[in-house]
Length: 299
Image (cartoon, rainbow, N blue to C red; front, top):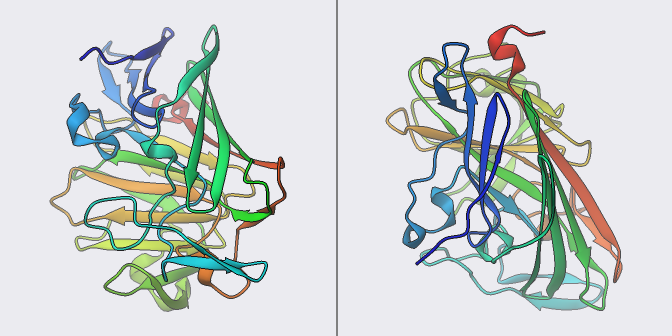
C-alpha cells in the first residue's frame, strides 16, 4: 500500500505528515551544527498497521482524553459517546486522530489539512495549518461545529518526545489533577503540596508512572534533551490552559507533554473547566509552537 507522505523541508528542519493517520506528524528532525539530523519528536516506526499512536504527534479534536459515564448531559439531554479504541472503556481523544485528512492547500513551507469527523453528538470540520521555519514549527488547529446544535468542544495536541537519561522538563503550573485506576480525575492538589511533581525549576521525569493533568499551566514548557535528541521550547495559545504529562516509567524511550484546553473528563466535571460551548457553525482555534533555536545558542 502506498502511503501519502507530505514532506516539508528547509535548510535546518524536516517535517513529514501522514494525512491517512489523523493528519499526524511522522517526523520532525533538525540539523545539528555538525550536520547530523536529530529528532525533535519521536520518529514514526513506518508501520500503518500499528496505528496513529506510533507517530510523533497527534491532534485531539473534538475533545481531549477520556469522557466517562458513556457520554455527558447538555441542554437537558444526555449525549452518548461509544468507546473508540480497543481496550479502552471510555471514548478518548475525540476521533480526529483516527480520521483521514485531506490536503487543501500548500504554499512554500505551509501545509493545510482538513477533515470531517463525527463521534457521539459531535459533527465537525477540523483544519490544521503547519508552518515550518528554520528554527520552529507552528501548528494551528481549528474546529467548526456542524452538529446543528450547541455542544461543549475541546481541542489539544499530543506530541511524543524522545526520553533518555539526560531528558529534563521545566514548566510552571498551579495544580495537578490526581487520577484513579481508570485514569479519571479524583481531585486536585496544589503543586506546593507535591514537590515531586513540581517542574518549575526543571527536573528529570519520574521513574514511575505519571499520567496527570496540570492546571494553571503558564502555556510554556522547556524540554532539555541529552545526546541524540533536540531540546525544544513548547508554546501554546492562551485557551490551552492545561497540560497532560504522560510517561510509563524510566524504561520508556518517550514521554508526552500535551497542551490541551481542558482536564480529563471535563464534560462530566462541575463547571466543565476549559470546554467551549460552540453554537452551530461557530468555531474555536488553538495553537502550539515548537521552538528549537535555543538548543544551538542562536538567541
